[in-house]
Image 1 (cartoon, rainbow, N blue to C red):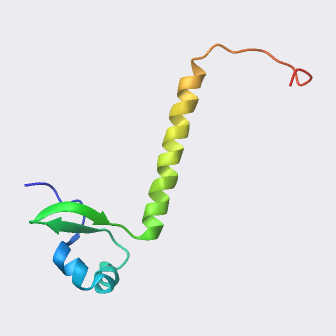
Image 2 (cartoon, helix red, strand yellow):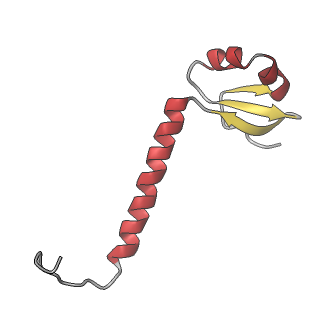
Length: 81
C-alpha cells in the first residue's frame, strides 16, 4: 500500500460530487485524492502551491550557482561591459 502524504483524503467520486465542500473541509491543508484507495493526486491550497514553486525556484538557482562556481573565471572591467 502506498503512503498517503496528507492528513485528509477523499475519493475521486466524492471530489466530483462536491469539490467546494472538500476544499472547505480541507481547512487550508493538502488532501489526498484516492482512486481505488490509492493516492492519485493531491489537492493543495493555492498559497501552499505558490510557496512550493518559490522554494523549487530557489533550489534550482542555488544549484546553478554551485555549478557556475566551478567554472573558470574571466576578469573584466566595467569599461569592457
